[in-house]
Length: 257
Image 1 (cartoon, rainbow, N blue to C red):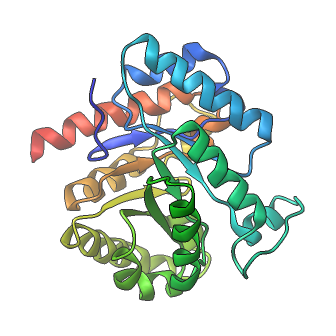
Image 2: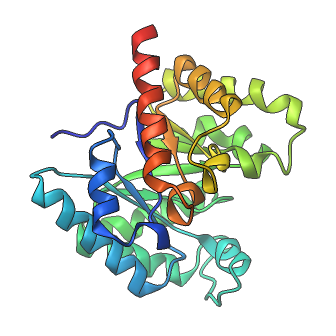
């Protein structure tokens, strides 16, 4: 099976997905890859990388893995110590780049708040390792929105985190901002994924709210590449049902395209 980053669901792995049967179920529902948080414990990251590759290989599929760099703020928010290299890059991020290079991780997600200069620093680290993953931005506040045109030229796509965006932008402005960002990404021929509690009702329920599906449906019709699920699949009670709900929704989107 060939994977596409267009109109796809990407589940985040965590405690709820340690069983390989869960991962195997994901593969049946059109995922575009799996996401592993760089803030997880080392043993957990290694487990998810190994199990993802093992399950995909059993089916003869080459499934992309996305690995997120946390940045200094991310580690501090988790209450974890980190060594600062620049304002927003920690030495632990470089260690995750080493993991990515060793295990041929296909996509690296940059930390929030990263500047163009820091992005070039990370690209230098990748080049020194002869490691050429795709690089995705994280868009989460007005500064990231304002610098998006410049940053997109240096990256392959972006993740729009609506949960974090809502902390710095009035809620009524978010739909218009989201629409604008999707259009910018598509015009630049870059992928843009929605994230940030996008299907949060399914953390504890086996059915989504209609409003969540309507939001995702219209965003996909507008040009979004897909959805990056977080706690819904990493720690939620219904990870497989969450992926299946979005898989079915994407079928509906395609029938309207």
